[in-house]
Amino acid sequence: MPRISAATIGEHRAQTRDRILQAVSRLSREQGIDAISMTDVAGEAGITRTVLYNYFPDKTALLLAFTERVTRYFIDSYERELPAGASPADRLRAFVRLQLAGLLAHPHPGAADLSAALGPDAYQRLAEHVAPMQRVLVDILDGGQASGDFQVLDVPATARMVLAVIGAERVPLISGDVTVEAAAELVSAFVLRALGSEAGRR
Image 1 (cartoon, one colour):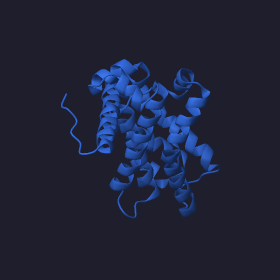
Image 2: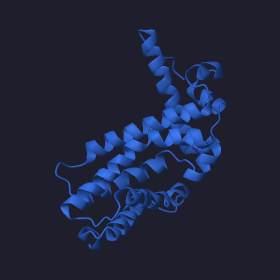
Image 3: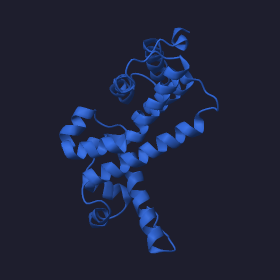
């Protein structure tokens, strides 16, 4: 792999950190996050394990940093791709599609498996890192409720249910049984109908 060239130590560290997280991204697509080892990441990034541990003391710290990066990318993509003045239904469709695309781009085990692998404390920290993404969904539901497009009894509970429906497509997506486009259409139609949206009946 090419050597990192940077003008300052700070730039060098930033570039090395970026290389490490790009390695995690590639490995997650090939073998899944739960199967990745620190040795795998170091080899993929073209650095020694000692260097890797200077940036991330353990796999939990590495996964937390990676999750934060993916969450930030998701939010940036959502804000960039959403048309101005989009309806609540269009906002929901965009959220669902980007979530499903993320599941395919960065395969990972389900919440229960991650909790078992990381332990409750680390899993809670992981949940805090994805909270901004969940707030996007809550804002969509709040907006749809306020406009009368959605019928929502309990916004936080409904957000959890929507995420669960999206997560149900994780295995079919990763196995190739369904495409992102097909899954997004199915999930969006199901959720919009559940929310009483006119868009879900079309």
